[in-house]
Length: 402
Image (tube, rainbow, N blue to C red; front, side):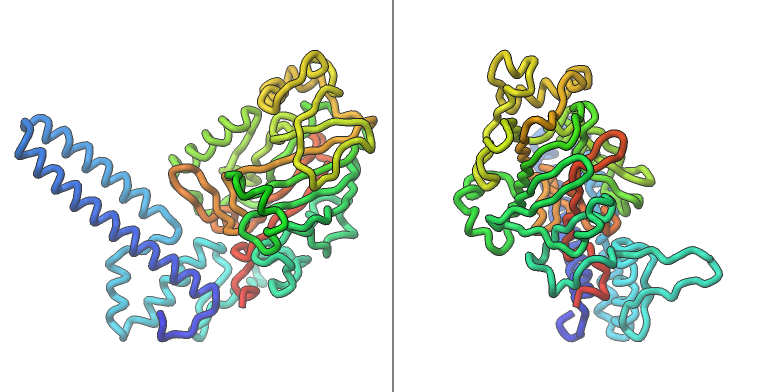
């Protein structure tokens, strides 16, 4: 690896290959330890107990091995050992690279003169080639908060004149925006990026890896069973992890957000939940009375009326009440008031573009088919409250990375 010149994407893919080697080596060590454990049991316990324990350990090792082989970066140890043969080094390197490129970016690249380039479009197909990145994005060298970029989404027509904007991150200056249904400002805080010092006291002792605050007014009444927040994608997911990992992540999300609905296997995957029961903090007040957007949010929902007017509710109580569609349809976001929403989580780390599912952390770029996560709110009739894309360098096509 050290003797060759590689582009940044090739270096990253080589790192993936080495990661698979290390993980397989750990699997081998674990298997050896399991065998030693079985020998100890054989000497100390009955034959029946030995057989039962052996069967369980063999099943566990087989499950771990099968899970390992399904990972997009997995490469068999036997193939890696061939690298020792210098005559096959270049050929094998290209094979491994192209395999990983295909898994990560789809069938868009081919090896040519020891480099990987976009395939020439097939004129006979009549179908346009698929774009890996949005052509409206600035080059990586122009990203103000590299390796992360937050921009208005082209999906919302209201953003048409602002697609070249870059939303400030970890800056005390909020980003103003206006859509068909909402006018306000947004403040983005992400751990692990530059200029984080200004928010060090705010995030230092918190588990959350990001915090999004929105403040503003609705332009028309929107009932809470019709206001959603989440993510939507135009292309299928690619190289999804093992089913048990997807189910584990889904279970975590459902515990945190009871109203969530998701389908990661659809042609147009989505993850959506009711806005009122999802945000961690909701503050409602008369226009002009809410504190500055940089100030920590405080739960205040008395002006929503109903159960919220009878007694002061905590964030958990408000989420539980509004998670029910029957309850949510009784409340609305009123244009007469001003609202402050705060969204945060420790499950997604935007600085590394990884998801923390408790038992495992996953790099998101390959699974999302190079589509960005969003800061997005919309109504059930398809109109947007706000819509921003959160890009990361790992989502960008290889030719853009150097």
